[in-house]
Length: 101
Image (cartoon, rainbow, N blue to C red):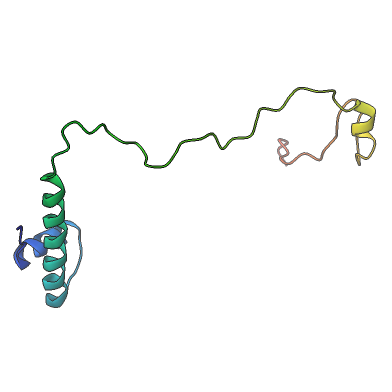
């Protein structure tokens, strides 16, 4: 059983730049000790012969099927409702003006 002292918690707090009260240091010493105990318990488990597991969930593709190429809309139909066009493409107002003013 690993038991952190208040001095060790104080050192950890110093490294983490934390300002802790005496009550917090005592509580964290107890809580961090419990975490270390559990980690030691997990480390003691014999996992020989158990393959590594990436996920316990069944893996399936959640992506949709690829789009199939089809006929495109006619250029005239695409530009029909455009506020401005040059007959071949949409015309939009420039976002940035490169002129020195």
